[in-house]
Length: 172
Image 1: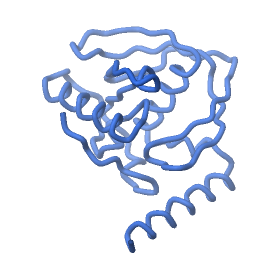
Image 2: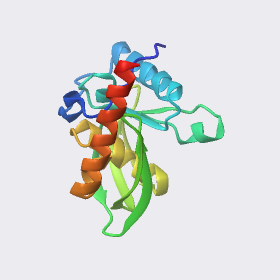
Image 3: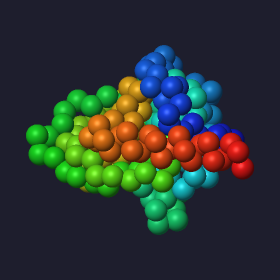
């Protein structure tokens, strides 16, 4: 597994629409493994391929990582089939939007379909943190960051903070 650098906002690559994976191959499985390693290296619980510069509809999530365990799940070509009208608010952060956290309202429950590492079609009903994480990571596949769900003022403040941090890092 290879630790890959994670792209941070306001990098325009994060706005790219990811394309479907035609066939789940060893190359796609290696990508998912590299993504998991990169996610763990950054102490995250989810990562979309676009966040490491690959515009493919692949994401990995590991909620067990918060307890020091490793149980990554790869979701290839994920699609939301159904979302509840009931909503839930979670404080979200993002490896591509470092040090910014804010409340985001999303459907409380979803049903999604995806391909697993073996290319088999799976369906999953999720609620709580898993539902939020899946929606957050699927947003990345469509070029959407969690700050895009915030008010214009909060988004603008977040982007200014990120730009300033990047400039400081470059001059250091």
